[in-house]
Structures are given as structure tokens and as C-alpha cells.
Length: 159
Image (tube, rainbow, N blue to C red; front, side):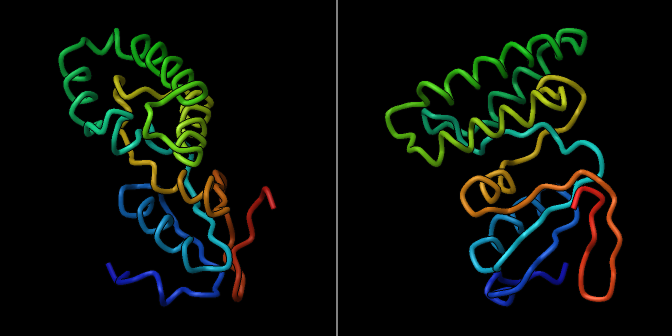
């Protein structure tokens, strides 16, 4: 609610709590300015999708059509096969306009989605890739555990 612009975090160490749409976007913006950024997520983040596909079309258009036209019982299976296809495209292609950093972000999205078993076609909500872009291109860290706030720092169980 109070976030206005990333420049106020220049040179600081920042913790973003939550990987919802705002948290993900803010993490990516702040990572441009801050010395170090971490994002803390409770359990699973939403299923990650890039904002745009390799052909430039908006991803939400296709995921919404597929999600609401298929029975949920098919959702996880369709999503799993779709995620395998996306990983292959990220590794070997992605369109003639896809640069190396975009390809690396797509690969990380596939890795994170597969590791937590989410699908754009299941009941688990979709989230944008902002924090993944920050991780891959700007060195942001993802923490999936609890943390304790001490004086001027957050202490994570995983270090």
C-alpha cells in the first residue's frame, strides 16, 4: 500500500513478503536498485506464468481458455504435459525474439513449477514471473520458510 518507487531502496537490503502479483512485481522493481533482495513465500507460490508467450501473445488469454474449458480432473495432467513442453521450448527455442535472459527466466519458471507440482490448469492460482526475473537476472533470493525479524535483519531457517 505504501510502496511508491524502487529508488528509495537504492543501496539497501530488502525483504519482500509474499509472492502475489504486487509482491512479485515489487521484488523485480526493487532488485534494480537495492544491494540485495529476498522474497519470502509461505509454502507454495502460485503457478508461475510469463506475462507474454514467445509469439508475443498475452499468456493469460490461453491459460484462462484452457483452464475453464477443461474439467479439473484433467487439469493436473494437462498442466504437467504443458509444463514439460514449456521447459523444452525454454531450453531449445522460445521464438526468434527470445534472448538468453528470457530463456533463463523461462527455464527457472519451469524448474520452480515442476518442483512444487503446480499447473496453470489446476485449482492453484497463477502468478506472474516478476520475482523469477529478479532471481535470474538480478540475484534476488527465494525463501520458502519461516523467518524471524531481529533488530535490523530477517533471519531465515535456511540461512
